[in-house]
View 1 (cartoon, rainbow, N blue to C red):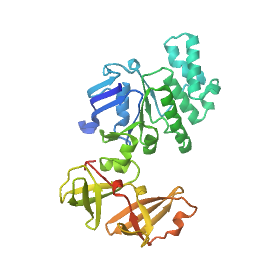
View 2: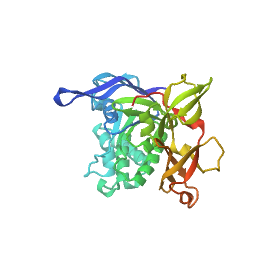
View 3: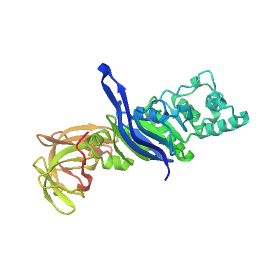
Length: 368
């Protein structure tokens, strides 16, 4: 597969207060393939937008090389790079109609009017705004304005489209609808999307691959399944969804399995290909939805006995906090399949927790 964007040892430094150097982006190496929907995911201040701006040319890198379709673009200004950018604030021209807003970039290139008209019609049809071309931005909803901004970027036919949290101003329901629409459009037109977001669910929903950033570093890259099911660091496990993270000590091992003693009380045998040693302390993670709750005595061993500390009803599921020992509690999510699934359970009730050992994953790195 062809590489659309390649970052080689990209860093960005800013001068902070008292002449201290602030590292915004630290030695990022990344390859994004042609036609991929790639998301940069992380909390505010992690460097994801700065990385996007360096690809666009709005920020210069302090070191490293940026390639777009095998061409070095470090020295190229934004308007000479084969990319276009959609921002969270749509920056539409209020005095122009929707069609005029979309056509603006082509008019600056002095293309023939008939060619502009055809491309405007095709692009508005792509974003499902063909019936709104004579309206003004103030007459559109937030979601419709977002589509106009997207159409204005797509009509230039960039090789790579950069999107900086473009759905951030929308309400939750519309945001989810637009996530699916964006993914549909990306698949239909087939160009590379690089999408910046702090919303984990958004990244999991839309992306072919995700790059998780933290404190200026790119700490894990993978498919949504790889990022969610097999986080490599504590930060990724915590940031992507909810997790139970606990320590264990290796007490027994074979060629493909390890027996871990959790908090010196709870034995757990897990499959692993990672070479470990007897007595080694490791961190493990298990997702709350992977754990099942059963009344005491109703489920045969193996199982971990505990007491319900808290129940929070969330509609689609219920959130349980189960205390196993004075210093160990696990979060459990139980899907509400019936009308009163969680109402039969009581705080203080003794229960048994069960989960598959394959659901428990060793964190490979202790940093972050």
